[in-house]
Image 1: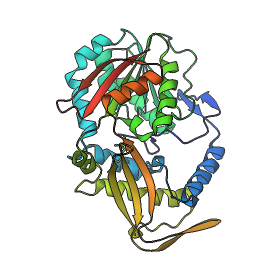
Image 2: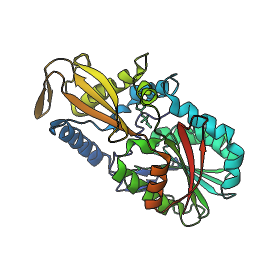
Image 3: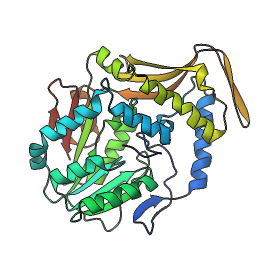
Image 4: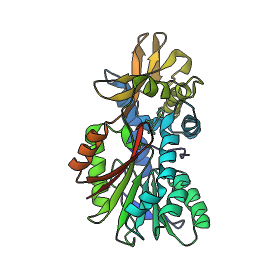
Length: 338
Ligand code: AVI
């Protein structure tokens, strides 16, 4: 579903230089600086008192495969619940969205959702935005064959920074689609910042359609991040081999275990890696001793009360227009307008 560098938090890269390549992907440049700053960021995270690895480092090729498996797990309700909502309410959703709009999907990945969405909304222009330009290129080429009448564009962009759209994009009206509750992996200030940027992207006559994972019984949320097949554990542990590859560290996955729980104070699932033995991890120019039981924080996944998310939308300049739910109200697809 996602590319080998898909980053739900969209935090990587410098995004400082952009150009449209011959393959039609509008892409950020400055790769050497990006690699250097990525290494510095990872090492700084490992050296800080409460060690942390950004969730973006889940998504190398193996991590993306594991995430795809997660989305099909019986315990992981968000993906299939959102899909059911989108299918069940396709008609009213289509009726609520401005006709002939430009649809901009954030984190478009393999453009699987895009095909269904375009069939439902029939936009004149579709813009797939994703951090991985190589993957985007392939997905968009396929989508163009599937939807020959739609003007389909690809933009490689880092959601946490600036999203620069092609200058010749049809202006109005725009619908920004941000599915999968990827907003959950940002903390509140970052989420507000991103929503505010989306608000500017949508313009005054645009709209936002966003998938939001809602607060529910703790055992349901915890099971989704502690599946019985151990796929989420493998996904979490895979961050260590990805980090080894990126910074030349020597994490041994066998010395770590997956730990995920609901933090009620923060209303979020936290994922950690916990050392099962005392261990020293080395990297070029540094090392850190981890005591048995010490943890590395790898991900937060916020679970919102509907009214709290509506308030966040309001702070970003959106008014809430509509929420479509599943029957249990586990997940909401929200339409917001300026
Ligand atoms: C991508 N993101 C919305 C997922 C989530 O549920 O927070 C990532 C994930 N982490 C563990 N399982 C799935």
